[in-house]
Image (cartoon, rainbow, N blue to C red; front, side):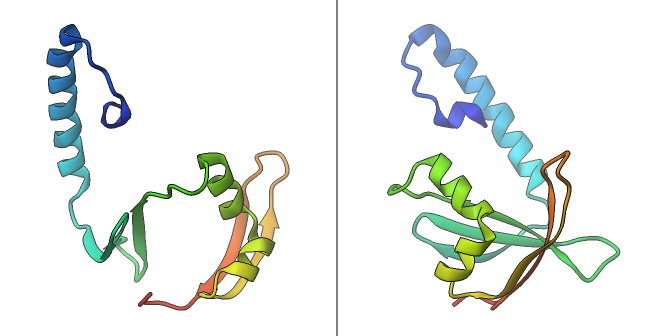
Length: 116
């Protein structure tokens, strides 16, 4: 929730902030159904839950990086060629289809897992 990242100090805002936090926590609890914590480290948590009707999982990651800007992080995640150089977990990573109109890509990504 956006309110988790704001630093609002005005007393008038406090009541609205309390309600917003309560609403946010309620939504978070509803969304947490079925998630299993797979890994927890300082500044990093990874969860997964099964996708109904398949053998696949949906993953959710929460992490904090203090040595790069959000834009730098985003750009590195999208650069599949560069990721092959620095990510030791990658076995195979290639864009197999790209839609120039929407900018979306289908990526075949094979990685070592579980992460230790």
